[in-house]
Image 1 (cartoon, rainbow, N blue to C red):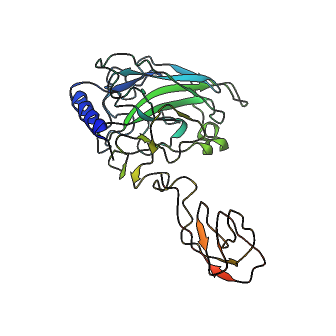
Image 2: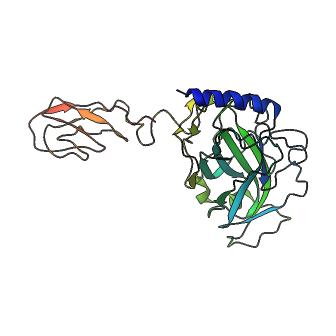
Length: 319
């Protein structure tokens, strides 16, 4: 439950944001910079992705070259930082993305993005945000032209999703041929088998039935392999019908369901306890039986006891 302080701060931020601009991407240089404002996506998601508008994919001289393995920096303009929040960096091979585009998340930032300042960083919508976030173009991204996306889920204020896009050329790492900026690689060349390790872009607060919590940093259901934590506060999963599976249970704790099993009453189980039912589930759970003892942990227990029983698994570890 939000504190009185956070409630007052949220009200102040909402008032501030109604008369002042929010945040937008400055590095890498975005598509359609002259028409890009720093407001969030509309609540019904009709301008997803990339803040659809006239001129949304005009490069306007933007030329962001990123070698595989290089460290890049995410930078912003604006002062309404809404107490921070969580951000993602993603790529798609579609040069004019649509709602059906496949995105690959290459980095997630939990909390403190675009700033760890409590409340808003300032009142100047054109101020350069002092915070810079490093990320790496990972192995598994083939050379070629991509659309880059930055998304942000603010910590305090209205439940919103921000998204800016930029043209990107990934270079290096190709063993097949040198990359020529005038040609576009085929789907097979751009999406290698290793690309499957990158999760899809997380979406919420845009009329899709998924909502982020107010006054807490978002914990992405599937942040991917490259993750940094910039915030000092709590991070909580989203609620509702969200991509990435159930978000009400800690990772590794779901999937136990109503598994039942029989086991010997005594003996050492795979987890802690004096006995365990067979098939305690994929996550933390407790199995109990009519035998001489109960146990917990994943795996099946066995032993030489004389009693048998059935156990059911319960979910624990809710965030």
